[in-house]
Image (cartoon, rainbow, N blue to C red; front, side, top):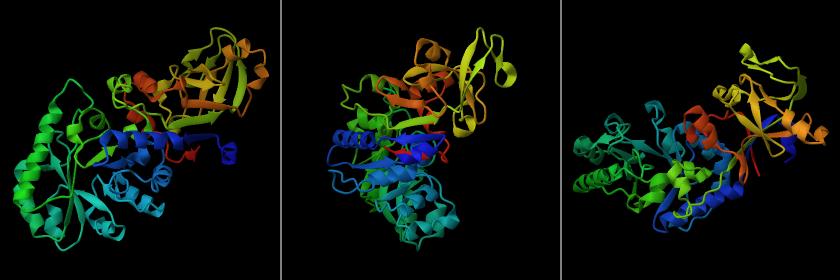
Length: 384
């Protein structure tokens, strides 16, 4: 932890919370279903190498080791270089001139373009066929699957898996997931007719793992939930009933860089968007929108200093934000205890005394996914 003393902003990763969430999902999906930890987007902002290093040696109760799901070949290679020997599936697009790297690094990848088996039929690629079942993003149209299957039959590819992605599984009022399950089953029958029998079939994401056992098949992909967050309010509200009480893994911190007095009428920050209505004491924090702290939190965001919620004043700058510490100073006779170098919580915290990703997302009219994934990857991730 001595490294933290040298940092002006950092992200703490709670190892025990991460393992707790992993165990929770393994219990939910059962022993017959393997689990894929989705670590794309820098492990949802948590640090792909850090999360990979924590999970790589963890032994699940399923039939084999933990899978990792990434978006790009670069993420996959980063895991390999971090010592991760687990199975890795690349979910996103790979430039054709890099496909052979998947053999070098023993990687599986998503296949949905017919040009690949046409051009690389002799290669021993390990692939998971992605089927379009209703989300209308990447995926093979079911009407094209027969033709696609014939290309695969003439190739040297190892058809390791078959999968799709749910469009609105977090919405309890929608039954659209049922038609997507049916479409995936239809695809499996078409492949079987062509004597292709993928070992793995997967469809479930975090929400589907919690709500719809019919989507579990024999492999489930868990992303957001692994990091202790829920994809929808209703899931969090019913977490006890769902037996899925998750623990947030991430806490983002910075330090006080300066404390100064502002006279009544003084303007704070660019554009003078905040004018002091009384004499104030403010703290300047060395973090800003470059670091991933959204500019939309100008004059709206809050932070925690010594367990007290304090408001951001003025615009969020590229590398600085200003916080009103007047109340803390005046209410606390030991005001001198708040000083330059003290820790500040930007996101996260302990128990109820925390700034949640959902709270920040609501202020910004976005989702918790965006809040955590936008934290600058150059910021140190420290395991606690």
